[in-house]
Image (cartoon, rainbow, N blue to C red; front, side):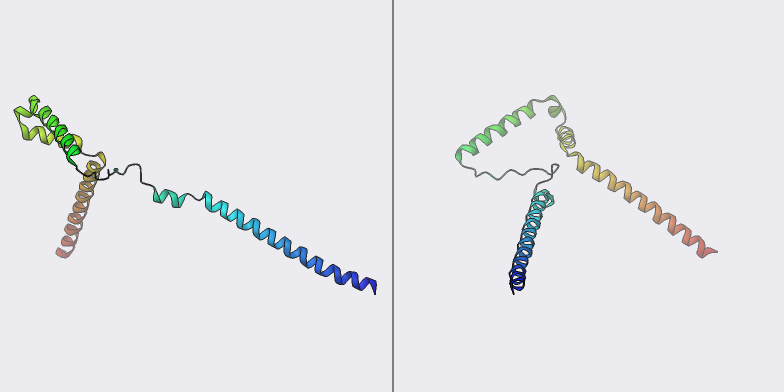
Length: 138
């Protein structure tokens, strides 16, 4: 009778150790997955601004003091522009050259590429139209 009692006591102990091992493994698995999620920076990179994107300043409220400083700053700019000899000779050309110089480089390149694609498409259309008209003539 004694051997049977030992086996009956041993079975619950085995089951208990199996369950505790399974629980520990599950714990370690979940911990590893949490660490992997912590190292996943794709969500973070999506939320960050792109380095090439222009940064927008928050609109400051114009109170009396800030309005006055703004007016003084703009008056100084206007004086500097009016003093320049190039502006005195031909104001429209000076303004046009200033605008060309201050254009962002990405916008200027995009326009050039777009024009090139359009001209290629036009050539293809002309080429395709001429070949189809020749086929009809024959």
